[in-house]
Amino acid sequence: MPAAVSVGEGLARGPEGVGRQAYRGRGVSPRLHSPAMTDQAPLRAFSGIQPSGIVHLGNDLGAIRNYVALQDRYQAIYCIVDLHALTSTHDPDAMRQRTREMAASLLALGLDPARCTLFVQSWRAEVTELMWYFTTVTPVSWVERTPTYKEKRESQPDDINHGLLTYPILQAADIVLYKASLVPVGKDQAAHLELSREIVRAFNYRYGDTFPEPQAVHTEAPMVLGTDGVRKMSKSVGNTIEILAEPDLIRRQVMSMVTDTQRIKRTDPGRPEVCNVCQLQRFFGPDFEELWEGERTARTGCVDMKKLLAERIVRHYAPARERYRELMADYRLVEGVLEEGAARLRPIAEATLDEVRTKIGLR
Ligand code: TYM
Image 1: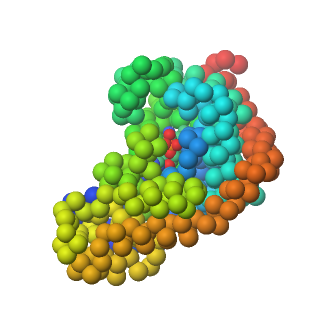
Image 2: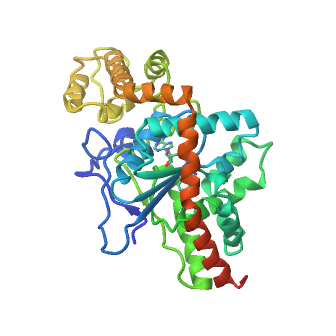
Image 3: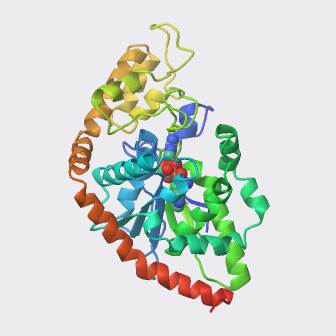
């Protein structure tokens, strides 16, 4: 199986440009390219998202749109990974609040409890047992070389807790506890996914075929750049566009975006292929190529382009923003969805653990 399901039609490969590297295809919205369906049992998809409290444009374009698309094609399971978040969030109130906000955000953006299962990671604690078994097949050197571990050592030098090292092993357990083989994620998760595959291989090699090797599924925007136009959009960097926030905040965030740094004067021609604002227009209207032409000929300026993008983002997410507010105002519905989700998964988690305990000689 390839490491990632291929996506993007007529991939723009060419001049090395920020946009060209980050966004692919020509579609208005990132689409899922489904792998071949088999005539066996329906494939299961799984993905996790940290309760960061703030859903940003990178989360949606890079992953959540595929969560929504996969609901109709596979048995889809989505998880708010509070146990992972404990490696960086140590404030109990913040943890509770952000978990609520993330659950409401996902439902507002289109996860439908009738078509997928949404739950909170710690509510199905079997995953921690499977993680322990996985730690015993994973060489320490594999986790020490994980890029995110190295990054965290830099970004939180006073808090290099053991969870940061074990983080990707828990992620592998998340996915295969439910024997999921498809994992909709952004490109930043590639190293974690590869490690999950290695862990599964190591387990299967030692104890016999037990788990499928998980495969990443990407959108056409697998790496959304932040408002700085250079780094991945990420809450920890502070370069996000918070799609469900108040419109004025969205406008301020979009207006702060860095465009083509070589376009100094309004009359200079722009280079849409390296301008993050122009690249993001792909996902908010079918006319993005006309907009790019306006930039190339300096008919429009960067400020025009940013105003337009801000208004389109505000408009595109207006129904979800409304729904989010409603769900947060009456959280019981969300609570019910999460409880039902965790309950629904219990038999699958227990069956996997029964099988594993027998295979490894504990029963
Ligand atoms: P997290 O919470 O950082 O991100 C959630 C999802 O959003 C995607 N994403 C992006 N995609 C494109 N451009 C961006 N700038 C961008 N920022 C975030 C991420 O790729 C991800 O798909 N380790 C995971 C959570 C996790 C998980 C799992 C994922 C735990 N267990 C099992 C898949 C399967 C994480 O921290 O994602």
